[in-house]
Image 1 (cartoon, rainbow, N blue to C red):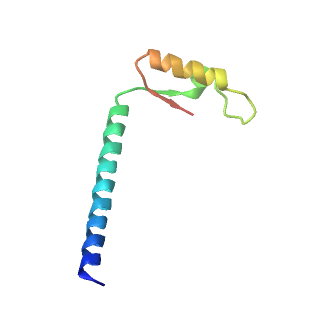
Image 2: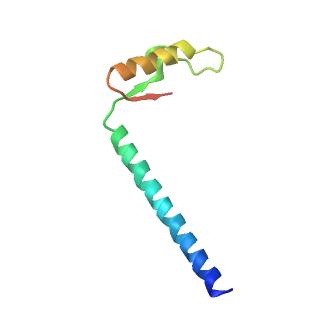
Image 3: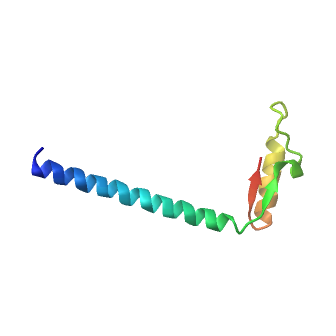
Length: 76
């Protein structure tokens, strides 16, 4: 392997590592921000996870209501 090719591959690996670390930091930050908001169970809004019921309106209502409360997580 030539020296130039070796240097190129090392720079590429370093770039990938930096990108991965920054991605993990971003995800950890987003997770920390999300933990400050409450979590709501889908069943509170009449959402059924039976594979038959059309829940479109109930899900949209839940999203709108949670957004009106300042945000949170809708857990199915």
